[in-house]
Length: 488
Image (cartoon, rainbow, N blue to C red; front, top):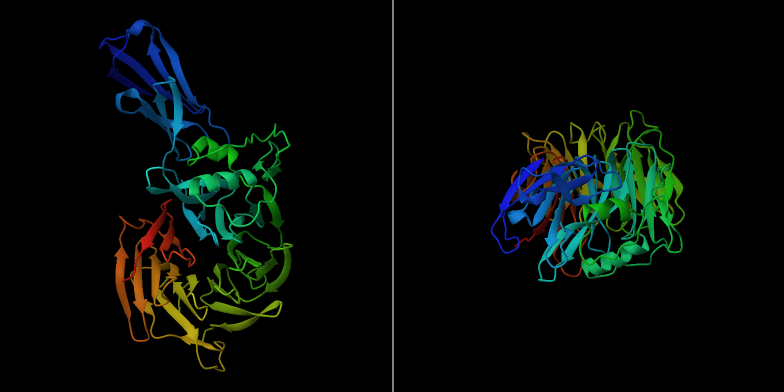
């Protein structure tokens, strides 16, 4: 509870007004006032707000704003809620607030051809973030939708297109979701630009009381079980709206893995999805390739011995790179309708001596990087063919060595292939330029500007016409950060 005694004019006087604000796990906040204006009178309920549905578990605390004209509550799931008193109508209306994950963020991916970013976390949610162009001309990033609320901690996400996403959690299934029509309309209103492509036809989605999947809800249906109501938004949704009315319908479930799916990647041309699961044998460490027009499994690529930690398609969609806990990387190249092994490291030519946590491609699709637990970043590029397992690839120059830290995330700057962002286990992010002879630190973001726990993923927004470079970082400290990067 929070007791708030304020002095505000009432009936033309300066008499003090007593108010008591209480928060509860019954999902409500209540403002109480004593009858007759005296603190000794009987306290009665004057205002009740909240009643959050979905997976919310109520409020853990609250307080009044300045002069009692606003109420702030914070929920069990890490969310903030603000209501402001409209003096003309005497009604309490919800307001836009900052939001985010309340568990470690495991993965983040940009939508091809659109402005938004999707992230997944151990809080069992998938969240979509996009820029809101406010009426005053400023721009803020907000959560616009929560396409998935799961019963398991999330592990990976991949954007097949601006409208279709695939996600993986601590289960053996890959789930595919498509944007509904109601999200289309609200996205255009808030972002100021429509999503490319066409809607799949569903108006929205809901989770039935006895179901585990997001069920599509169509415009002519009454959703009496799942609580979906179409909303018309011109500003980012409140927490209540996010939890109840912004789910995406589930299109497909992809079965084939023997253990929990751990890594996903979508080809930039949208034609393929690659997935891999936790593994201790070569059989289970195989990569599965899915054709996105039918969602049929078209190929299985056995290669690694242990869990694949990250998958990455090249920008031209011709190459698939994988790195693993077994300290090796494998490169498969498309040949006709199939992928064939093109290069890999082994005990004779592997530079990394610990787990390889991350990998990334440069925009020319001819250079890629790998980062590992012992603090090394290696750049690999096309070279003269050799008789070793490296094939047409070789180490470019010398590795970047950061022996006091572990490299957990990598991303190449899209407008220049000689700059790479490096995320570390300590939470710091460094920007380095490289050539055959040396590495140069251009800029480092410390804990105040980056993360104070492990950087789980770095991802630059794909190159577009405005030439602005946006870098998204996902951290184990529950944060998703977006940076504007300028390289002189």
